[in-house]
Length: 331
Image (cartoon, rainbow, N blue to C red; front, side):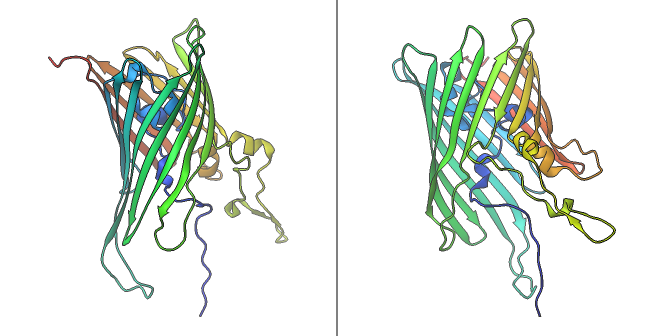
């Protein structure tokens, strides 16, 4: 007896957790923001060229209530090496997939199992003398355990940032997850989720507003794919296949974000991911997929952040963050 099965579309790389958002601020700004040249050391997890002196002695802790029973988080800390060498950043990203009921090929119940993955990183940035350019790199060690299978690998991120402080403009490019598995789960070595992102950000001169424009996954032009659930069948049984065009594909690379009062003690962040909106939208339903938003509040040495990212009509994810300035003495 034969059965026909259909599963999810896509899924070409391992260690996909490396591309999850690293902080509430990044999530609120659309999920792929790389132009965060601020105090927050977790921004360096996505773009190491943003490591700067303002991050020194800052500790950031972030937690995400994700889909189902999945939870993940990040932590980052930056410290001064010395006045000549500058700042070094260290970070960790982890994800726990929860507990699963096990069954064999005949449907008989077996033992429960779980899965988790962790990436440890160290990053450094260098300001090219007599220029506005900053270059940076992250080195990452990756471990993964899914049921009884385990794997480990390594990767590097390479970033370049142009910082124009007079015009309050930031232009960045980052190549992420260039690496490989050192040990596969079984026998087949899988590729890592390599991506090239480009971004530009600028603060308006007359208003307390900073906008962000990001182009994601530029290493692969065609992100759009046929979704068979969106095929249309006429009364004669003819099938019109779903076929996203050039404009639809171009938009899927685009992520927009805006910050209100970006340098204040209280700020508001909004974002929109066209790709998430298009891939998660439900036909003939308004789900607001792709929208995200959040706030940040500073109280003395502490900065609290929260964001909410919308996936579809059934829910989204909440992200919580705490940044602690360790440069100041506790009262």
